[in-house]
Image 1 (tube, rainbow, N blue to C red):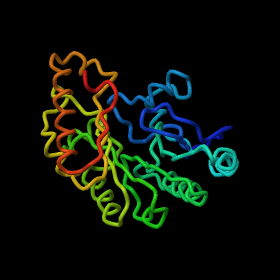
Image 2: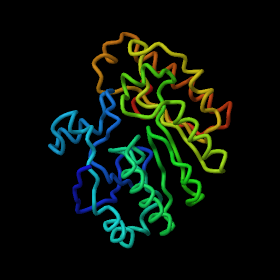
Image 3: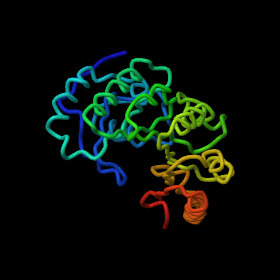
Image 4: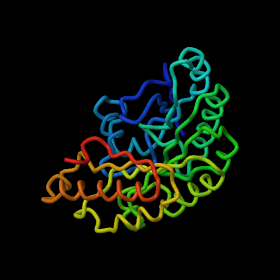
Length: 252
């Protein structure tokens, strides 16, 4: 893997459900083709120049040193740190990324800072040895492996993601699922209820539409479709006592 350095690591996120975040890798091997918002932003600002470059992640070599400095300065301001909004902390098949993420979470936990994790990889079982305040999540927009291979080619299978999440749930941790960007019917025909039943054990579900896609915006019924999906998610969460967050712009 290649390595880069940065001047800062922790920053306040503008994401509607986030507090502080960190991105200790540039790029992501999962190569999502939604299109990926993180890739679009990094390309726009010249940090990567192509999809191929984005799929070859670069580790921030001074991550832990930056955390040592910034935790001291920001600790009183931080409610939680999310890993990650612009990369994946448990990149499937990249042990160096996984090891660095585990070390970063432990360092934050040792400072009594809660971590919120989201991945399309496999959540390590060793996370159950860290702070009980942590929350662990996966991205899940389908159960169809053929669709996953096409749209998230480098990510872990849906079944493996769910199994790892369930193991942490069974170990007593709060777990959650990000169902975003949920595909429209002209991308894949699927049953939302079946997907929801597969994750009925979680504590929270975040649901959001697909953005930045001409294919979705050209689908005549996309507004009604996402309105109906959001209502279905809300009803399911209410029935199963699951916290629910519908992303801004999903309901119109």
